Length: 206
Image (tube, rainbow, N blue to C red):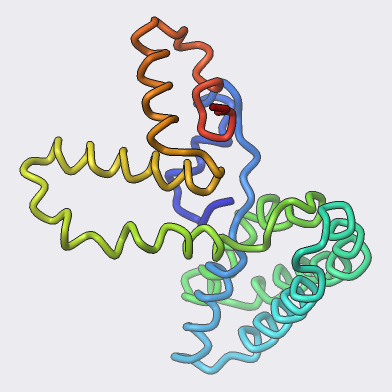
């Protein structure tokens, strides 16, 4: 579950990744673009788009905390018709806009990532956005001032890697100290590089 940063594209590219990831894109990032544009430049298209996304979030609010199968069933029944109608509606409006316009660029942002945006419909484990993850990692950017003088570029990169490891451990309910100690031991014991998936935080068991 990611935002629209192009750096994630390689993860889903079979030419660049041995095991391509299924990317799910964030609706909040797309909505934020349209909302901001609509505030700066009044647009019926933006107003309608934001309203349709609000309908999807209303459905999500009603099924929050439900099991994945229930969430998927409700999404297929209620959310899918809204999403199915959305793409042709956007494509029709896109034809009437200048290709160089900012609104057209925002619409293309979503259409380019369409498969990832609608992935939540077929997987009840997924959320519609990355809000939960962003809230979980908010303490990391809040420490930027403390990390400003890391001693060197290498020191800053090392700090960033460790912070990422610890944050992901917490998200997966793993003791960071136990995970790092066990992983370093496996590396010292010449763990095969081809089996790196076994070292991921979500596969770790004390």
